[in-house]
Amino acid sequence: MEHQAFDRASLASIVISPRLGNDWERPRVSRNWPNVVVRWLSILPELANHGPRGFCRPAKKPLLYVQKQAITPMRGWRYAVAGLSTVQRALGRPIGERYASSSQSKYQTAMILLALIALPALLLATPPAVARGKYVVKPVAEKKVKELPNGPLYWRVENFPTLAQAQAAIVPDHWNPNTVSNDVATSLAVEVAGKAWLLTLGPKGGATPGGAKVAEIGPVPPITAPEYLLRVNYGSGPPGATTPQHSHPGSEAFYVVSGQLGQKTPNGVNYVEAGHTMNGHSADMPMEVFNSGTTELAALIMFVVDATKPFSTPAQLH
Image (cartoon, rainbow, N blue to C red; front, side):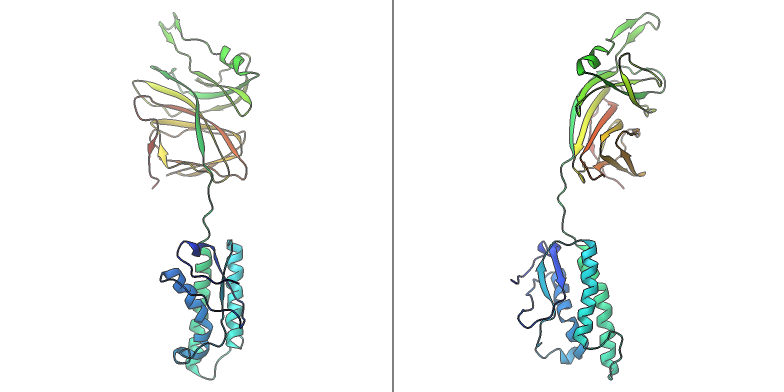
């Protein structure tokens, strides 16, 4: 077994293993606090056994050695419990048995308490960093409009056999003599995850000829702006992938195609399974979106935002 000095960065993967032996040297440590704990644990049984004066004599046996190894919480507790057994073996008597000397008994008790506190803290407070995959957000369709339809609005999610059919189902902007105004199309056609989708912002209960309704999300929190941006993004990423904390000048609604999506806001954390939806929040809500499942995430994200403001702004969750 090769022994090394460990710095703060590498300590995240250190495991304290309670083996006794004559052929191992006690590890040399750096001058930072985690390695001071390692050093302290290595002398703990000697100090408990002999007291501060007896410890001045050279140790005959090393009591702990350091091995680089991946660590999990369960493994950390296992080593912590095993470490207490090492203390017991080094003391040469069951833990809790009184010494003839009351001062030695006090040292034993103090050292055992320190072991109980220090081992779990060292092993569990600094687990190895797990690399997170990237949460990828790709804009797939957008449109700017001067006005939105009247009344409470919902995002309608529909499937079509092909992207061409979904695009053909969008009614072009036209003059409506009944309302004496322009009717502006608020539908966006996209092809995502091997399917053709039509996303329409409009009144609840609508339907597009030729489409199969998948979901309806709303009511969309209303905003007022001189111009509006309707956008559809495709979000994807492996388990643990997370967006930076951010906000939008409008609402952000989700339809999860596959996997599980999580969203953290100042109001708490929400989770959405595949085939389900989550309505958007009011404008400028700080949030963090992440893959909370165990498989690849794929989600359609629908926005209604103020087109005159930056689409996304860094934010902080409080």
